[in-house]
Length: 406
Figure 1 (cartoon, helix red, strand yellow):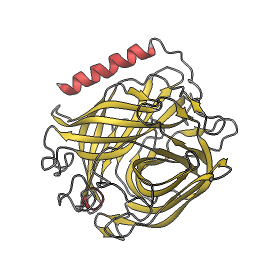
Figure 2: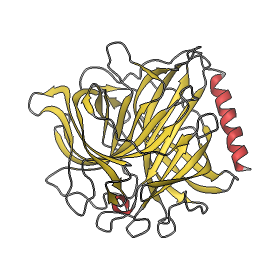
Figure 3: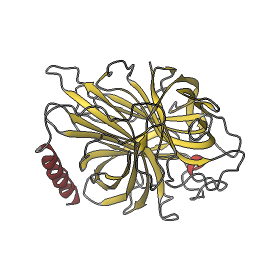
Figure 4: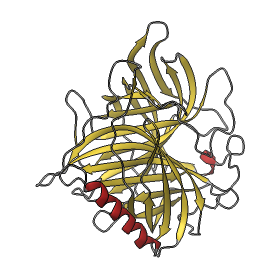
């Protein structure tokens, strides 16, 4: 069956990688340095992965789950920090359900350590993930009904690669989310307009196994003063080097939580948050880079950052990512970029995580367990009006925001 073939491919790729990889953490990503300098990211070759996972569908914010198998090929480097990877989702009988090419925007790396002796140290690399998935089969809790009327459905979230620094083996965690009609299928601003699932949203999570099951549950997203880390530009097509990251200060402010599909005070799956930040690199004419989420007016549905709870893995001892909680984020952002001195209106997608294994901050850093990593998917320069459609498909990433709160 395809499920067994994916598992075999993943095992072979993993064996090939670990046979030539030393059993130690792999070090910094090389993206720190003087303001606005071109650099090359120091990133490993990330391998093919395959997991038993779970498909989740929420109807009026009440979840259901089905067993899935999720496989993705080794990511291919497009340009500095930008990768593509073919992904396929099957049911657990081996029948194909969804496939597509995931765009992966690398944000940052850090280390974690397991809580139980003998302690295992991991180095983690995080990516914001965006993908237009195509329908290969039918399952009402995995394949949204907009597929068929439209050839693809837009999903977003994150991917972590976690390198076991003792064994040289990669593990991973993937979450992808497709929101309800109001956020993705609105006739005024979507490339996939229509009425398909007004009260239903969908997620794909991997792994979800007997050793570390994933449970969908609601919880308010973290808030507080930003204690780390940075913003960074993504090189446009045809430009290979990265630009050094710009450390930021700022805050994430809680507004309200409830259910977004449809809007109600309960169940509490979604948190609205305000994200604000200021960079440390200061242009003498333009000033520092700044960003702030905004409240949009009708017919746009966003109240600053819409942070949707997906749920939590449940085993504190792993495998990776331990008992980590995950949300997904989408937010309109006003972004003032000090290099190249431009103001952008942007729509960001990504994810937030909390808990899991113990975070080991680098020397001089203040990383905490509460991460938010988001990437722009649509950009325009006010007062120029945005080019429609704004949502519904993967678009080039212009800027990245990745921060921690206590």
